[in-house]
Length: 202
Image (cartoon, rainbow, N blue to C red; front, side):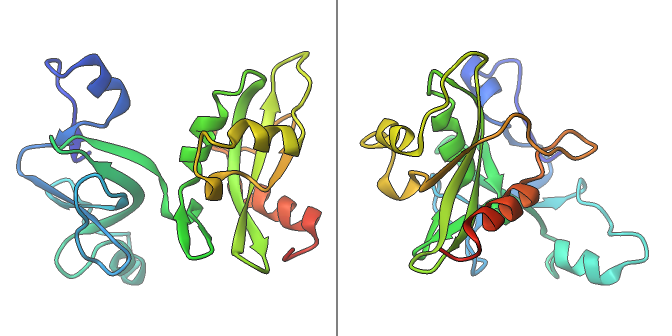
């Protein structure tokens, strides 16, 4: 762990961020070209110092993918650093959707969908689209006894409250999400099911 919150940090900082960089450690947030991004801009979290692993056992190729020649470990996490150095992790690079050349972070959309009174859980994935390359598909679980929102009603709920490019084009209701043995949602399965429903690029 390269960051930490302190007992003296505000409650908001302790619950909404992963803290600031620890002593004798370095972190940086970079763009796709490897350049540092300004504070407040999302990018990949990289860390360097004693907390970085030596490497993968007997797998130098995989080690080289994770730790570059300068000793920076590329975490695969999308993060944002505020002006006071507090870090918020907003998603994973592998989950990022590129719609019409614009990067969309599913977690931002999911957090908004949680504000819908009938939605108890939401997962957003990218599915193929001929015009934009990818479009957003929201998989939602609704509260017991609630009427599932239609695609149109959910898009209306989003309109004017989040950026138009972040409004899911497709909405699917699901009873349970596919999970890994460690309790994480298998988004790869949701993508595959979405592509199957759409019959490929739409």
